[in-house]
Amino acid sequence: MAASLAGSAHDFSLAGWNTGGKVCVTCHVPHKSDTTVADAPLWNHKLQTTSYSLYTSPTLKATIGQPGGNSKLCLSCHDGTVAIDSFGGATGTTMISTANNLGNSLKDDHPIGFTYDTALATANGSMFDPSTKTVTIGSSPTKSGTIAALMLFSGKMECSSCHDVHNTFTVGANGSGMVKMASAGSALCVACHNK
Image (cartoon, rainbow, N blue to C red; front, top):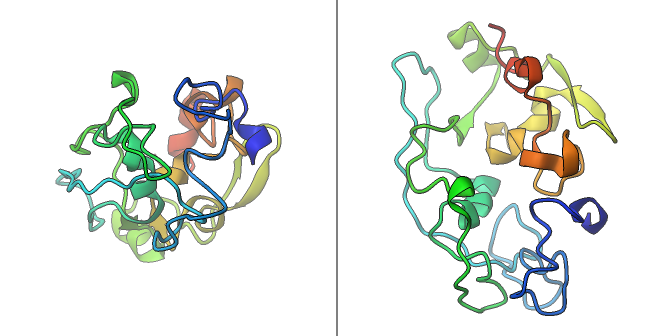
């Protein structure tokens, strides 16, 4: 994984606060890790404790809850409440850039933390069935499979449904945005939405 992170937005090895220049240590550590964190092997970063204002829409058929699973891991930096360099038990001071700071309102972001299944696709009418729709993620390497297999986590839409935190199956220069599919032609959107 470290090789795919090199040069990406999540490569903090050259940051002045990353003593030792290790690529993975900001999020993971082999010893003295926080083993209570679900969905995060060997977690080393301080977690956020924020409650979020959630996305709503009169046409939304899904039940949205507070972010869970790996989305909470992403938000431990990207909500701007925990410093990027708050890891290994240290309290850091380097906050995420304004451009990458989602804040505690997720009202203007794609909804996350909801179950995306055949029942939702049927009720919505403008979404593909995630158990049968095949997608391809990444540009080099690529991987193909169903939406459910490649983009959902415990059947839920999360941050990592569209973004690959480890920059393995991404598209674009140095994994810009770390997205799994291109934005050109709305490819990422039409992977799930049939309109």
